[in-house]
Image 1 (cartoon, helix red, strand yellow):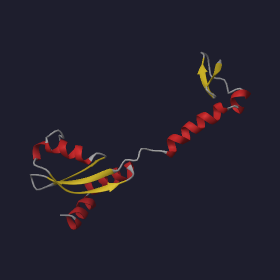
Image 2: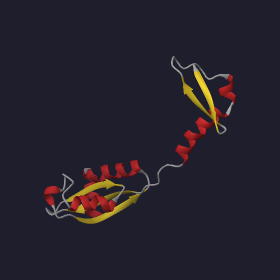
Image 3: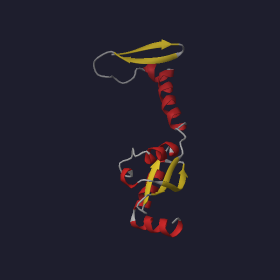
Length: 128
């Protein structure tokens, strides 16, 4: 059984045990359905607007390290203080360059490309 409770002109749906039957005619034609879909679309319309950074570090052993983060200053601090296992033993590290990218998955894909063979060649040709 589904109970609808009105709170300040917004209907909230509570499940009271049992299976969920299809919404009643009241729920279909009331603001309940619109409120739920509006809440979903609001989340979709306003994603977190982070910049993602793909960065290249010059390490102490003359090799480069490629990484990705959304907080570049904090990540560099963690690299320098030895909190990142991948660069802990090859310090000191120095930031060579970074790329600011709006999309999280675009940034991770670009990092993946830079770690590939052709990406390493790209780094050597254009940045080192």
